[in-house]
Image (cartoon, rainbow, N blue to C red):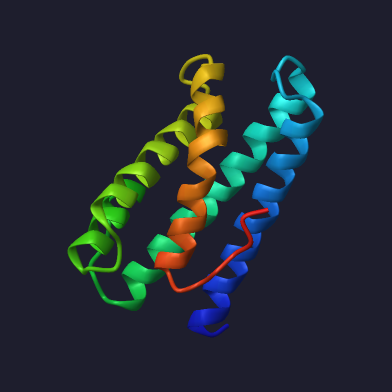
Length: 138
């Protein structure tokens, strides 16, 4: 698979997840139905994983070293000038949310979920753009 195909594939995953998130929010705007909230979280996890995959791919492609984790991969992209610090910070926060959701370190705060839905989806779109791929905002 070519370099750009890998990025396009991951961007398509993110675009599809954003679309599903919008569908779930429309179906349950108050986030008071477990099934809808669960679908939201699952799609956020998938989108976050796709951004991690894109970041790791770019780190390898540009021979930036071996990151010790997702957060460091985003920082390596900043150091190379491929990503703005503010966007890297937002992506690292989203990865932190993903880790909590996947590993159930603690109960998820619905207010944080609402913030990610209202603000974080734009960060996903911006990250794709920074990686050279445009996706639909929905």
